[in-house]
Amino acid sequence: MASRGLLVELLLPSAALLVVLLLSAGLTDAQGLKAGFYKNTCPGAEKIVLEEITKALSVAPTLRGPLVRLHFHDCFVNGCDGSVLLNGTKSSPAEKDALPNLSLRGFAVIDRVKAKLEKACPGVVSCADILAVAARDAVALSKGPSYPVLTGRRDSRRSVSNDTNGSLPPPFLSITQLHTLFASKGLSAKDHVVLSGAHTLGTANCAAFSPRIFNFTGRGDADPALDKNYVAKLKTKCKGISDQTTLAEMDPGSFLTFDSSYYKLVLKRRTLFGTDDALLRDATAKALVQRFADNQSEFFKEFGVSMVNMGNFQVLTGTRGEIRKHCALVN
Ligand code: HEM
Ligand SMILES: *[C@@H]1O[C@H](CO)[C@@H](O)[C@H](O)[C@H]1NC(C)=O
Ligand SMILES: *[C@@H]1O[C@H](CO)[C@@H](O)[C@H](O)[C@H]1NC(C)=O
Ligand SMILES: *[C@@H]1O[C@H](CO)[C@@H](O)[C@H](O)[C@H]1NC(C)=O
Ligand SMILES: *[C@@H]1O[C@H](CO)[C@@H](O)[C@H](O)[C@H]1NC(C)=O
Ligand SMILES: *[C@@H]1O[C@H](CO)[C@@H](O)[C@H](O)[C@H]1NC(C)=O
Ligand SMILES: *[C@@H]1O[C@H](CO)[C@@H](O)[C@H](O)[C@H]1NC(C)=O
Image 1: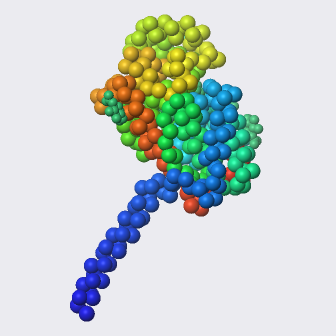
Image 2: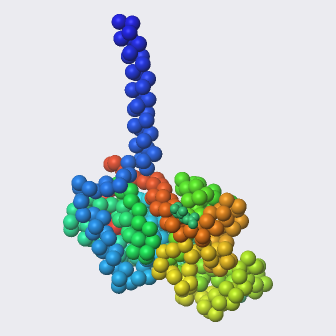
Image 3: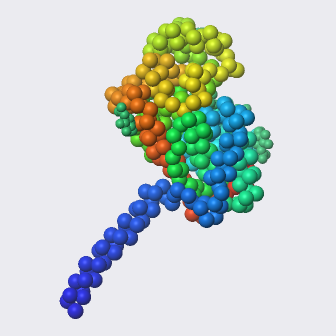
């Protein structure tokens, strides 16, 4: 009997430990996200997304950047819950009505993907997951890396314009402020450097960086941290400090190609935002910038890891939230 008691005593703690281990494994696995979540419920889901994104990008190649940015803006405001896609109303403006949205694009593409998925498997695939998969595909279709995306997110029923306040980084934050903001989204200082490399794709409105080239300290000057030749080039591109319509390529010459040239530009001080330049103001960040500039494979390997980390932030799983029928509307 004594031995049996001992056995129970020995088993109990290990059983408890096992439960704890299983629970924590479940939790660290982004609260239930996994690769191939729709394998049984909608086997063609990721293939349908890829087909639609491929079609969309062949017609409108400049949507590569915007499709990546949508997932970022979704995740940073109340988690990756599809809230960025919801339409607001006059009395209740949504995230997409907030100031930093000004330039978000790609909503119609996401709506088309969703319509295809609703036909194939009604009410199964969330809009939040479509954003994560579409971002991965847009990167891969731009000659960037591909990576297994985790799925199983559900959609929120809330999208409030003011929620973007303090959650999305304005382009003049310091490296310390950026670290704090990314940490508040569960992302490391390394994730911050890696994800900033997404600025290898896409364009920015002159208005987003014009104070930096036309009137940095209020004396008609440019940010002294910038390469002077680059400032001159940007000034010929943007028509003055209040130009609201011109777009500038963030990675001139290869803004449709996902590569590590962003980091080379950072080192040459040829960037649009103070937040890009801020990567040089921290020894660890700067070393990573140098490493990615020197070795694109290294950047590609890390990018998938950091995108998955970003995609884990505050997701709704299980029975929380809903699977929207239309990405712009709650059910
Ligand atoms: C580190 C802080 C960041 C700041 C301050 C920032 C700021 C900006 C700004 C101001 C624009 C230009 C918007 C416009 O005027 O059109 C932009 C564009 C873009 N951002 Fe970021 N961003 C940051 C991080 C990220 C991250 C983490 C991602 C994705 C992983 C990302 C992806 C993009 C893309 C792809 C574009 C181009 C969009 C287009 O082509 O329309 N950014 N960003
Ligand atoms: C959402 O808003 C956009 C822009 O205002 C509009 O074009 C679109 O039709 C709306 N979508 C739905 C489903 O109401
Ligand atoms: C972004 O917000 C502005 C200002 O509130 C609004 O006029 C615009 O329609 C919004 N853009 C999108 C794509 O919803
Ligand atoms: C959003 O914030 C502004 C300024 O702080 C405030 O005037 C407005 O009432 C807020 N709107 C909502 C819906 O909370
Ligand atoms: C954003 O939040 C800050 C601090 O909570 C507040 O001071 C500011 O008025 C808010 N702005 C808007 C537009 O809501
Ligand atoms: C530059 O900034 C100063 C100080 O804020 C302002 O007085 C001046 O009008 C600005 N110049 C332009 C061209 O916007
Ligand atoms: C570049 O990075 C890859 C992936 O981490 C690595 O296998 C390779 O050895 C690196 N190349 C150089 C020249 O350091």
